[in-house]
Length: 476
Ligand code: PEP
Ligand code: CO
Image 1 (cartoon, rainbow, N blue to C red):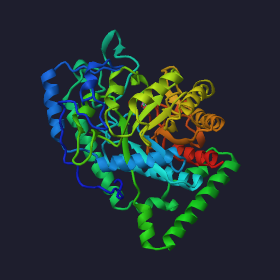
Image 2: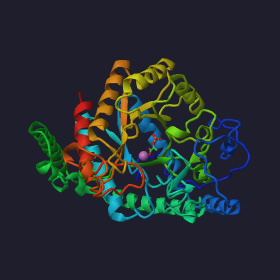
Image 3: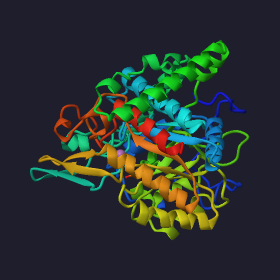
Image 4: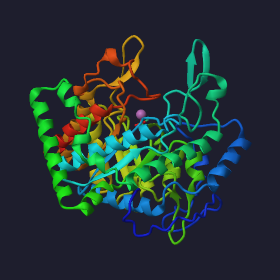
């Protein structure tokens, strides 16, 4: 994949050890890969069978890493350029990947929509876009309640396929450490397929003729918007034809895009078992993914997740919701990035369309006053989930999602900070989980093809339309 331009692409022959604390410039003196186990977790995962957990962790430790430290370093450099306003990050994928959906057509469709969105955005923003998938490990989910009850029966909630299974029976819902190994294996298979697709070119994706833009003709769009989309796709097609006319090598360059992986680092057993030192580099690396992130429910300053992630050299995302206190956010930056390394922290704000002005702006101001470096990105999904209909089905409105991004842009403009990325839950499939946009999905359609085991995702059309609208807003 991923980055072909890394200077050091030698394999990371790991020196996996979770023993003595180390002391080098990248490792806090009291930290080691399991130091988080002494801290409270906002989302504890308890395995009843300790011996089985040890066996699974031993297995995970012996497997090769999924990504290399060179790739992680490359992403850090790109993120540092995005902090300076020279790049933009597009992060997206499923709310929860499932082991069953580890299928070629689903993975290819996800890659395709992310790639297409990124091209629309490169064209609109006139900036390189860093592409980051929520994939190859997005298998662990935080839950609002540890217990789910149905008809008087109480069982542990479903925490994603890395932890337990979605079926509502005792065996399925008991955290099973073997799923750590299965999750790792599925992440590896997913990554292998993505790496091959990207290495093989995937060039046809660059031809708008092959894009499913038929929806423009039947979508419920205002005529002026339809005309504008048409103009944008025509311009994009023209630019791609021009690249093609320059000759094979430039087309080849264009088609070999960089891609990075990310997931919520919720299950610290999984992350710490794959945490390694590598030859000729100091510090420790979480080699399950390039960009792990800490969720809104696990960012407590004295909690297990901050403890674990302050010790690894990966860039780290942190979700920041409406309950976040500005001073606490600055303290968190001091903890996970004490030396203020560029490209190290991505703050992913997710306030809800109506909370941006009162909740986001003070945080932007506090971080700007602290002078600390962060990449600001907006997740317009998680603050805009609503339950509708008699069944209380979870959905999100296209207009709320767009409106959070627009409000966030305005807040950044007022404070003088740079919104350097967006974070979406989306799929390349034709699902009916979010309402609105030109797709015409309404509340009545939701049950027709609601496939997410967790949060509602933008479908192919909605995601592409969002990219068009974003490009328009962000190019202003
Ligand atoms: C998520 O990204 O799926 C998620 C649970 O987000 P948050 O931590 O922002 O609620
Ligand atoms: Co989600």
